[in-house]
Amino acid sequence: MKTFFIPLRFCSRLLPVLATIAFLLGLGLGLAPAKAIETAAKEAFLVDFETGAVLFEKNADTPMPPSSMSKLMTIFMVFEHLRDGSLSLDDQLPVSVKAWRKGGSKMFVREGDNVTVEDLIHGVIVHSGNDACIVLAEGLAGSEDAFAEAMTLRAHELGLENSFFKNSTGWPDPEHMMTARDLALLAELTIREFPQYYHFYAEKSFQYGKGMKAQPNRNPLLYKPRLKADGLKTGHTEAGGFGITASAEKDGRRLIMVLNGMSSIKERAKESERILEWGFREFNNYNLFTAGETVTQADVWLGAAPTVPLVINQNLIITLPRKARRGMVAKVIYNEPIPAPVTQGDKLARLIITAPDSDPIEIPLYAGAGVARLGSLGRIQAALGYLLWGSLVISEPQGSN
Image (cartoon, rainbow, N blue to C red; front, side):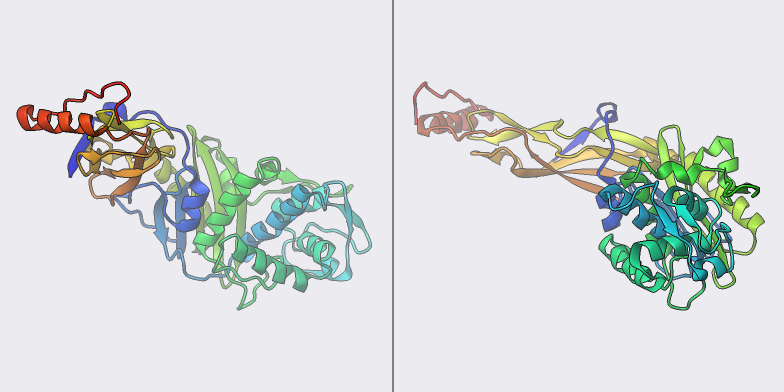
């Protein structure tokens, strides 16, 4: 078995990883943080959008009341209907008595009105309108109960295994639950799948109806220019406390954060800003290899070529604590020499990335080309050369078998 260490000066070129897969499997291509952070939030989850690397988590898989953050699922389903053409932004939906009478946060639609889907989306995201949620739910599924059942079914299909919905609004119900990890995944899917609609989450205010005052978005991070936050949703109930699901993009990196269980609006604003800044400050993404790139060459025994390229079949970018960067080591492990014949695409080696105080990352490497086996005469010559000189001598006569 041979271990080959790769100088870090060659590990400097990369494009994004298939982060959705990593996110769904919980296998982000990032190393564990060397230093934790404390938070007043009861539940917390901070993840790198590109790599799926979890930077911080606290009770991330504990079911919790998501409050109005569950409206992310309501809007996700609306976006899906817009994408498949069964709904358009200009469609108008009727306001029922139930929607008009609903308490809590409101868009202030009136019974009997017909409201455009675009206005309702603004009403849900900016105003956190419970009335707008019910109008959408009834318009898409006939009733809010039917829509809540569809929300749960679709959430499980998406991999949100710990999400259960009893309404479209996040109204308190002991069976209406999500986890911080599920909310982060839902945010990631929203950003990735609906770039044409995601801009709604960055709107800072919205005015509905003549003579009505514009209501501000309750996401405090939208008003912090240096963070460059562009979504997503706040929430509050007595049972769940104050929460936020947020995303921000800075210097080409995007982080997704979920916090819940805080005691006040002020604490939510302070904690969300502090933890996002910590994530951007303490971690960075590092480009290593591009899909199809040759990582190294491996010796081949009795082959028509002396070596075979070992290639990576995916783009590889990893998230590391900035302080761990200098101690990062990349090495390739394989059994040497590799016997011919070799078929292109054969799995031949392992690329292992390590860093101080971090879990290792292991990536398979494959044959970048096929290598035929030498004919009988060539094999004899190679074997003799190895016995006499300690190295392979390849001389394959033209037309030999």
